[in-house]
Image (cartoon, rainbow, N blue to C red; front, side):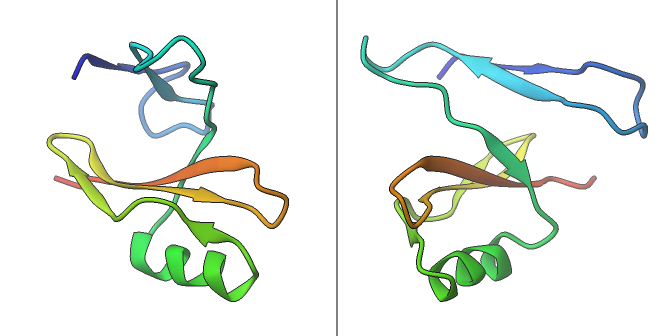
Length: 85
């Protein structure tokens, strides 16, 4: 999978960093991804508050652990626990 990290500021400073990748199909939309400290704890909180986890936690080598979710209104979002080396 083609996946490129994008940094908007200096390392260690707050900012809106992210990544881009090729669409898997023409109708694929943008999904905002939230950085979290613990993916498993955050997935549990999504479910406790009425949202759904729509994919299992996945390891992205060199990046971290990732999961897709939906809020109570069905809006897609994702969570990423960055890999800390």
